[in-house]
Image (cartoon, rainbow, N blue to C red; front, side, top):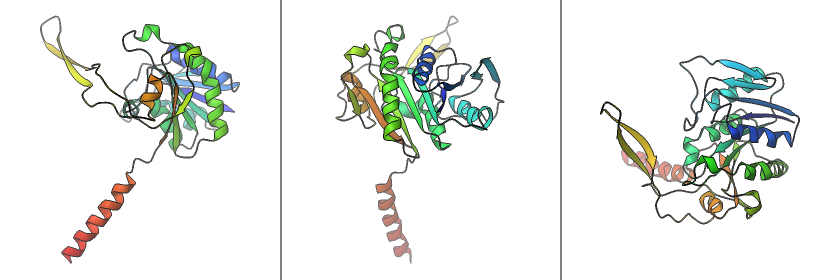
Length: 261
């Protein structure tokens, strides 16, 4: 099995090494193609107005001056064109990718682009405590449980047009309380805010930031799973169509057409 690894934290990120270790527990045929610089929050963007710069760091390890989406396209349509990967692993992200995170995440986008290209894909993210920060991240949780999760997903089968979003809870591996197959959750919409600051010359500038608030995650969601120290596995589909609304709108426009006639 040929496995291609990418991420959005950059080619030198600690989580990328964890992802490679997980992949090598499954196969010896592993390639790493990751962004030259951190690309967190770029979502499913791709470079159309700038050239892609490709740099070989070491055998089977490459850096692309671009987004995670660019990396997957470079891997599948250039470097591995004669022998495409059988699986893409995107991550392991530093921090959770749950709820509405999935619409912003470059980690999810890497797996999404692979799915679009017809390759089974799994996004892996390691949660960490908001107050402790990235210096206290439990990489050993993803390291320990990652190979088993990936094997289980491959054995179960990843359907076409579906990617798997896996989030490891913020705890040591021995404290994990099992695996939960979850739905995408939804946070409170008042968590995001703008923080105002001034530079050394007194000129204002602004940061997008987040605030903590009391919040009860929905039952069966990815939010609830990681809060309960369970590994969250969420299947995400490419089709964003809201099918019930399609039916309702079709009926409404059909009625309007009859009235016009």
